[in-house]
Length: 173
Image (cartoon, rainbow, N blue to C red; front, side, top):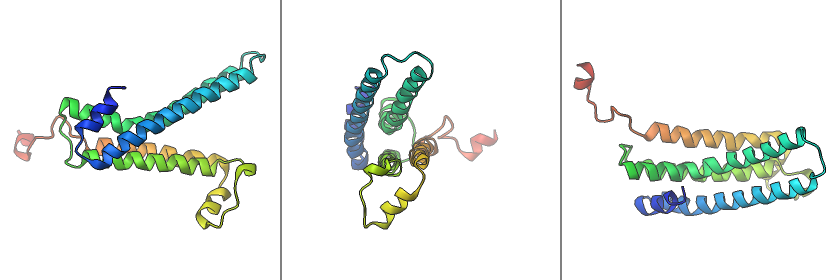
């Protein structure tokens, strides 16, 4: 995986994908560090607690971190795999994967705004921010899940299959 990130950056001709490969990899690293440090702090605070729900909630914390890092790295890994294997894809596959990656980054920001605790919300003159604050905190899951689905849908829509070079005449035979 660590070799795939610079490979995707070098192999693609799309500036959108290059920008996303740099920013997405840095963001994924930052999220991984924050989740790891958060887990260490949480384990330190609950060290005297018995098993059960504390252990279960710790494992969910790790799963939530992976759920954020996975779709952040997915466009980069898809592009690297596509170039290594020379897979048949749409002409603008790399660009659209970069766009989908940036969409996921924006969705993470929206999720943080929506799920911010009430005491951490700054008063804003923006109608958009106030509308996001008005949503229930659990609605913060919706933007990242929807954007992750867009990342994977973009990949599956633009990738070629084994019959990418097939013509209608060969399909009839």
